[in-house]
Image (tube, rainbow, N blue to C red; front, side, top):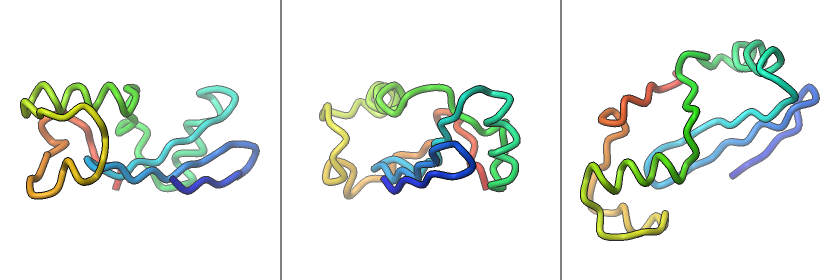
Length: 90
């Protein structure tokens, strides 16, 4: 995770074993939506679920035997976020 303070918000770039995400934390949606646009992100691609919830869905979908998000657990196999209907932000 790499974090930045930007225009009164916190922006985090998160690299997880199953994808790379941008997280914007701010006072309200009315502030977040234009901030996402200024960063070149598609608002429609926002994922309202937590990383743990996404991981739980991946575990169930791929019948993964492990319960932690260690990068080592994901080596040797590709887990596609496409199956979870998560859109890339481009």
